[in-house]
Length: 322
Image 1 (cartoon, rainbow, N blue to C red):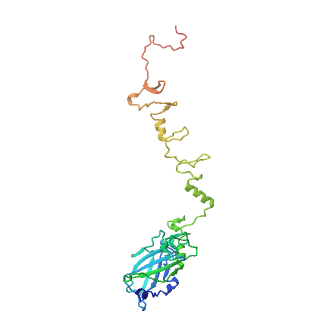
Image 2: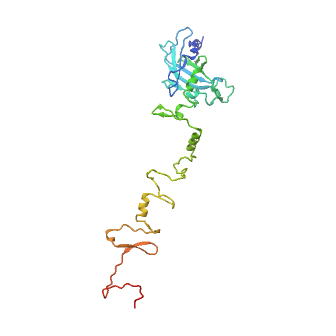
Image 3: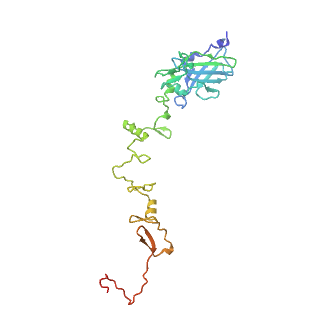
């Protein structure tokens, strides 16, 4: 009898309907990363325990119909002195474990009945062809479990009988809502504690989507569009800040513009552009603005230097001048 045949007598209590050999860890409903733990015992044909120090396990999670590999992981365990007992936890990231299926989905998704899976025909026991197999699970689908092992003296894997991973699928999928983890859902949370809020109406949901795609007319957008008030806007005594320089006659302006353009050196007098008047220095006293026909300019005020012969000045309209 070959060694692999001698080792094929596996005392797993038929996995006890998966109650012990393929059970979820007690924290699976709370764990961010679900884990499935397999427990069993391997004995040789003579009833003695299999106790190799470098026993390698290959665990496959398969689709129920065509036995396509949805998830595969290998782990190495030291069974010396263990009386043939082993415990293997899938997806726990323990030392000596490696995922080997090459699929793009996660372990949690492999156990979810949401969506479809495209698996190469070579990875399906009952593919019936060479084209990839598309597995679309039903809501009630379970998964099939295949466990194989070997030690350094064995050239091939010795596989245990197929087992049904029954309750694990529903338990792991219950961590999600419709296949989505809680972190992907909009929820109410206060400092890590779940909170409660009123239900969102269909109209609220529609408006939320409009905010996301930028078509809302209820709220102003960052670029200023979508804000068309139909009545006076009350700012409750608050300032409007970060206003740019005006470019149109109806534009609002800011303090800096008023300070530099209206009360500063570039003032406009009666709507006429003035040349730079400049800052009046201490010696500029007595200067006046005068219009030269095109612009306002500064000049020294004229002084009257003529003397009167008789000490008086006659002011009239010219009609009495001889």
